[in-house]
Amino acid sequence: MTDENNPSSVRRQRIADNFNAVIEDVQQAVSQCGRSAKEVTIVGVTKYVDAATTADLVAAGCASLGENRPQVLWQKAESVELNGLAIDWHMIGHVQRNKLRRLMRFRPLIHSVDSPRLLDAIGDEATLINHSFDVLLEVNISGDETKTGLSTDAIEQILQQDPHPLVNVRGLMAMAGHGTGPSQAQAQFARVRSFRDSLEASTGASLPELSMGMSGDFAQAIAEGATLVRIGSRLFDGVI
Ligand SMILES: *Cc1c(COP(=O)(O)O)cnc(C)c1O
Image 1: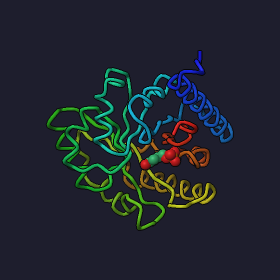
Image 2: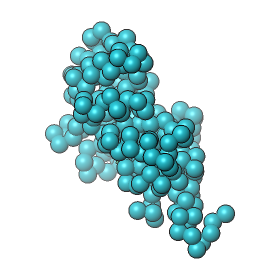
Image 3: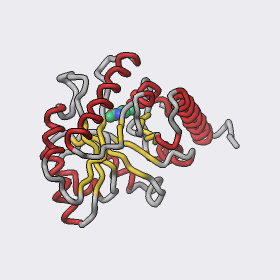
């Protein structure tokens, strides 16, 4: 029940309503392209809000959370509001190697591996703690120089080398180019998917995960095979 005089109760209800609306939109998008909702994980991007507001999203049922700064991820994971909750953490922004050790305690799926050196460093940490890690390689598909991510050639090279036994490259992450509308974004997502398909054929790697689509273009990403959609501002509409 919402207590309309209690701001935190109003906020919690608003976030739950937003999350449910996103679930409905995801369901509509999957059914339009003959996929199943089970194939798509909604990663709630909580970089805009504090730990208490993040906890409201978890209470609404969103168990997968994404942050773009390592130190914010670990601060939230250790916060009184979130510590002990069953959360699947997703690291979606640039990771400096000196932040890896503390970050990896929370066993995040790192979407944003953007250099061979970072991948090697993840392997070193995995060896040290004897724990395997899933990662995604961030591809710069828009060719936009200002965007981060590996070139398609660099990704092909990484996958042709012997994999680290404890690091599993599970797929690709991509962002549409800056200022791209939904239909241009869809063409870029289609290129990510076909690049993934060609990588699987040329390297023999299995790359089932595609992390693509944000608040403005997740329906297009789902149509092109996204398995992880990273949604932030839609969830906090009316709250931030
Ligand atoms: C902020 C961010 C998102 C979420 O974007 P919204 O448009 O707020 O949904 C997704 N992916 C990355 C990498 C981000 O930094």
